[in-house]
Image (cartoon, rainbow, N blue to C red; front, side, top):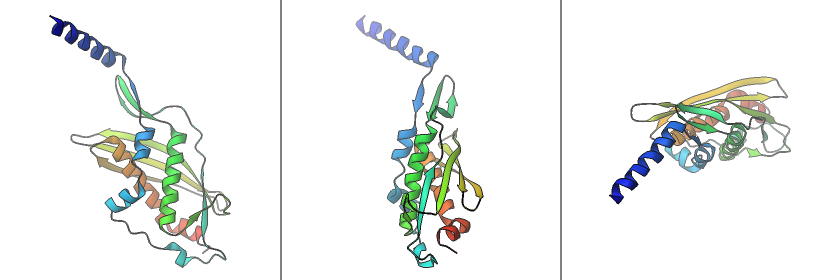
Length: 190
């Protein structure tokens, strides 16, 4: 009899959560998967030393500025009655750190005093359910105020977990930025 009482209590609790929904905050879990050494190794990326191409008078530097200001929950997966959200400002703070690590791997120093400024902002981030995996989509805007250059970068990747799929997509986007000839020419004074 005690078993049935406890079992029925659990059924009521589970039904309550299912019917009322819940919100999963994923910013930290995605950010925790932005490990440069692991992701660069997984994608078999061996960054080139960009500083060797520099025509700047001093060693090349860049200032990465996160201009994302949204702090409210941003839905990346809505699966009624529950949803998964991120905080765009916090997410982009972590993307800026990851981009910083990528530039350092290419021997470009990130310096908040550098005259070479790039501004980044999140444009979109989503999860898409697949049969056996989740897809992570990430879209970021980049502006170089000095030149007026304005471009967006986007990528989609898949993994067993949405957190990992998002980290993969962010990794691909940051590599698109670092490998962009316009960005390289700007930073390397060419």
